[in-house]
Image (cartoon, rainbow, N blue to C red; front, side, top):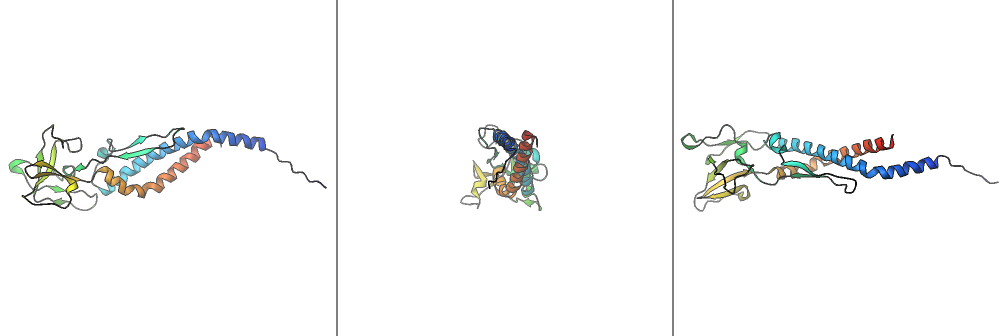
Amino acid sequence: MTYQIEAKGLDGFREVLEALGAAVEPAAALALNEAARYGRRLGSEQVRREVNLKAGYIDAGRLQVTRRADASNLEAVITARDRPTSLARFGQGAPRFGAQRVAPRVRVKASGGSSTLKRGFYLRLRRGNSVVSSENANIGLAIRLKEGERVENKNQMASIGDGVYLLYAPSVGQVFRGVSERIAEDVGIQAANRFAHHIGRRLNV
């Protein structure tokens, strides 16, 4: 006796597979770009939980999506600026100069109190100075070292002559690298969810 099995609907299944193949790359590109934007927003929030910076400062080009995915290149990139942040940006209260000068108080960490830099002082920087940039505007927070005196963290200071050093805090990039692993799983889940959404729309399911 011969048994025959008749499979029905395979033509329709083949059409679904063909449609799926054509839809994968565009759907993946949309999902990656949406996940990258989500990751940038989440990254900005996490950076601000670590350091005392405003969203406007971080979001003004210092943490941004610098590469968008497309069907031919399924890669989206978030880039954070590595230029150190002037410690003056973390100052508490209005800067005082000259005879009114007092020891500056700064708060770098988002949580906790401020610290007083007993030997620190604000100074106005001349335009054209190599250390003046959009990061520190034209006001710096500095310290004067005595001859032969050294400090522990030299990579967060820059000499401007006569024993005076401008002081810096970590860059947005440094902080972002520290929090990126913390948000990686959430960004991956967002990408998967958005891919499922877009592939479903393209297949009308």
